[in-house]
Length: 248
Image (cartoon, rainbow, N blue to C red):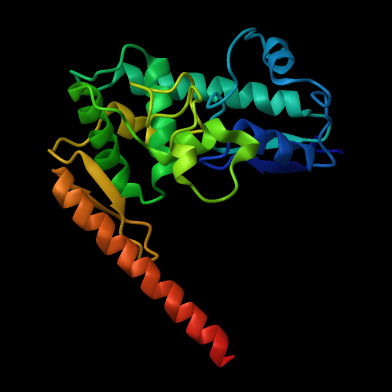
């Protein structure tokens, strides 16, 4: 008290969280004043000074220090301002020739990249695939957008029927980018979306070895072969797990 020091606490917004995840995490911090409890998303954004803005993707994943007396609204306001600053910086320094009309579209693309991979050096490669698809008029066909569009209907596995579900976020049946971000992208994903890696790959699929990495392909034939290899590896892993369970 004599020195005027206060106890600082920390709250981390995790890359790839959705707005729902963020609100749930904030609600679990007992020392934080809960001023947004009972507010819907529209009311919350209006309280922040951004009426009509969709909240998804608008809060920068970082660790924020706070002290007793601060509220969830204070943290959200700081995270929103941080995302505005990071997005503007990425957009102003963007590579030339991108098929993106605005910083908001870059934010949407960055959110997809964030959900597609947690491997740092793959983000620009995956962004490059999506940029080339947009330039060629191909659909993005990315599972995370389908999952986001399903919301609470998502049961944990993508089914064939899910890929045909008519939502604004289903990039298997709709052209271009989805209408809003699908998660909170970090600075690395923002940089990848505005500085995609050049190349000729138009497809990618998970390796399936637990590394989180992907196989990138130039043609549909190459991609189909990579998918077949992934499914074969997945079946082998499941068989090995089943055999281990029997032995136990």
